Length: 206
Image (cartoon, rainbow, N blue to C red; front, side, top):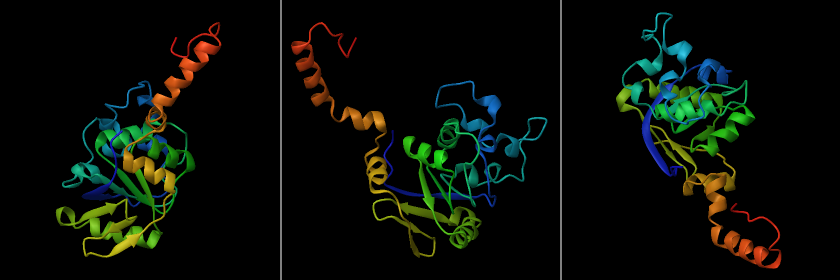
């Protein structure tokens, strides 16, 4: 998993609340267990018309937002089903951070597992950031995770809260497996000792 430290990027305004995971990635695209290839279907029902052509009114089909790495939305982002494909689709498109007043709990947790930073900020602040984002190429937003601040294009710094453990995991680029593998030497040592003391038990590596 790629570490998240400081990100300066184009932010795409999505002035919608209650964006559910089926809106983020429709159920018909959930047949894969791969984390790649889903970006093309991100917000499929909003990005494409019935004939498959792009909807020019949708923000991610417009320049410069095709290259957005930050998404700004309203309340209850990621509600609905618990599908982990939702953060997979966001990440595959290129989104590394989502800023919203609040998030559905399971989606919020899944973001951290996949290297996406969800930032909770008040609605009024999200509206300000959306106004900044509509300036296009000139409105790059910076998120400094170590300092826990969002920097507006005018230089204003906005602080945000994050669980210290989750912050550490993102800064180090660790998911649960990566965190466990940091203790690989101790795990191997335990396995050798257990195998010597109880040779009739199957190996953990079997």
